Image 1 (cartoon, rainbow, N blue to C red):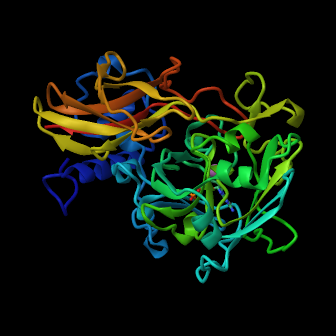
Image 2 (cartoon, helix red, strand yellow):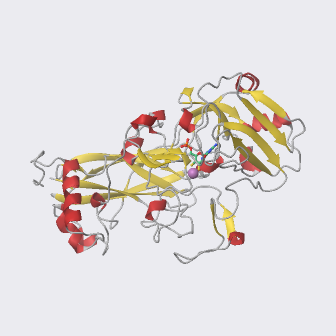
Image 3 (cartoon, rainbow, N blue to C red):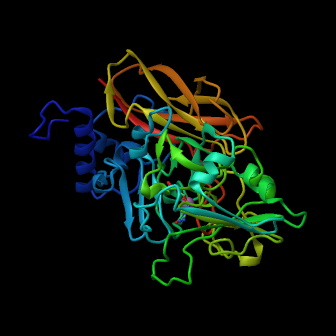
Length: 428
Ligand SMILES: Nc1nc2c(c(=O)[nH]1)N[C@H]1C(S)=C(S)[C@@H](COP(=O)(O)O)O[C@H]1N2
Ligand SMILES: [Mo]
């Protein structure tokens, strides 16, 4: 590509930018044959390209700097409430740094910056023998400290790719993270309070105000079945990567419920109530974080009474290196790598393809650092001749579930899209 005067040689990002401009000029919105011209490169595996496939190189937009919020490079999806996602190539670290963890707020960010461990309290009540009111200092002194890496993904991650579109944040791939958390096991705290036999569910409360500012309304209050609350990796966390949790990610105290929709992991945590029924707080009922009990045709509605609460998240993977749009020498070996995770399960295989899914190459897959940590995968690839390629990655979990190439099971709110991640690579 040489139509960029600032960069006549056409470095990889500029190839993509130039291709995008060419695309706009041609007013091409769909994929298919016309899209190839806009790529500015031959497509050696073109014969394997599904008809109508839109090349991923043409699908990217410029990242909206989120540096004001201490998260440079993240894409701001909405400002009120504040939501930001992480481009996949910024998720390459083994443990996600604070500056690269996505943000999903349902309400306003509470005034918490001045909170101290003696002045922030967690209340435990409901179906317990003894209600507790514990400061963070109490939590730290009374319960065993646990440190582990836990993946957290928004239930709506990938929503952008459902067709027809569904309402909610238009996440692409970046509403996922796997930092290292330190805290107490929720199970230890609940045992201390004495779980009554009637307790079947938790209800979580945080300090964030509702968007309307109405003090009687909570923006979100979700819960989990008591078995998941008692699972030893469900943590009440006061630290992330050995430091205070960022304000936007729940400082000074949050719940971490790994493998389940991120919405279960209450930020700015103030109270956990044990319930004798499924919790009925805001965003537990109706269409929120729920999918139809049966497959529905795309674009149709399902009545609230036919919706089921989402439990574990499905198997998924990301390509975190290289960044999409990069150039490699034809025939030269290069590394591709990323992470894979699978809700309550372990990932058993990751495969990659450079020919639009015609053939798959097994990647090396590392064991998780602990249960519920994502797993690192790597593969060495070589692109046979000059031209445009896509690298696709596909993870399989230990129950045999595999990521589909297209969004699975359309549902009214666009949850649980675990389609394969694709990047563009140019060979020269
Ligand atoms: N108090 C509170 N907790 C919350 C939310 C919220 O709006 N308020 N959003 C939830 C949702 S939907 C997700 S996906 C995760 C996101 O966590 P993060 O913002 O730290 O990435 O937080 C969850 N916990
Ligand atoms: Mo979420």
